[in-house]
Image (cartoon, rainbow, N blue to C red; front, side, top):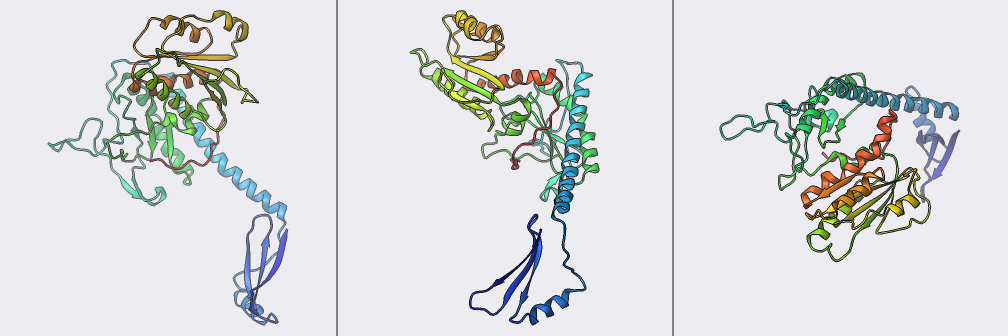
Length: 378
């Protein structure tokens, strides 16, 4: 609907007359003096370059809708091309435990040692300021790799996965050529590395640490799993003191960091009140050892369907009751992991996401997940 509105300024003879669309809020305004003579003059001055026409609101909304659909559709096609390329590369790759492969590490590029030679995993990586990317120095012909400080950047799993993902370089460039409105394109790996296009120089924090881990970002978690109902049960017996309790608390915080706005969680709880997500349901048991396997409990409440997965985290170096802890996880479609130190927490906690994502992978689900607005962390 097109509406004309007229407003009078307080203590002024002049008035403002506006014509605008109630659907999109677009319109024009012009001044009217008393009697309308000035308004007529002003309108006459601009008659040659503008005109006021009545529009069909429904048609206008449909046009906007079609344009948004085209814009989002092109983004979805770009993502699907990346997914297909990554899957093909992984399908035909044979794992090589002794693989030697140099790649561009975004923290090390263009870095030289005392002798003026480029450091390992560095190398010359041309960067130019680009207005399309907020005037940041980038390389639109090449992507590069960010690896968190807590992940060994030459681990065989990392090297094999990075080698696989090299196939994405051409897809990144092709996507950008087909849709120049694209900005950043990413690939987050379950091994912990983060491939960025266009390539950039990654700046660590003041301590020289790259704390960013793509696996903790909402877009990664939401795409890797469906909504979850989680109960975190923590052993607070007398043996769980000192360092063990510190590690347990850090484990809880790390699990909580992997949850999103569509997940439901209770800490130290045995019963969940209200409605949950009713998708993935899991219990996280954090303990320094289970004295029994509680088979009777699981037989009564969770078997044979095993709707609730049980993930167990064994804290500390003591392995006396490790077998029971492992049995609980393995017999309830979960995952068992042993956490010795604070440094082990991040990598071990992430394993539960891999388990919850397996059904989606097996079913070949390729749903496009639209997250909330994502602010650059780079």
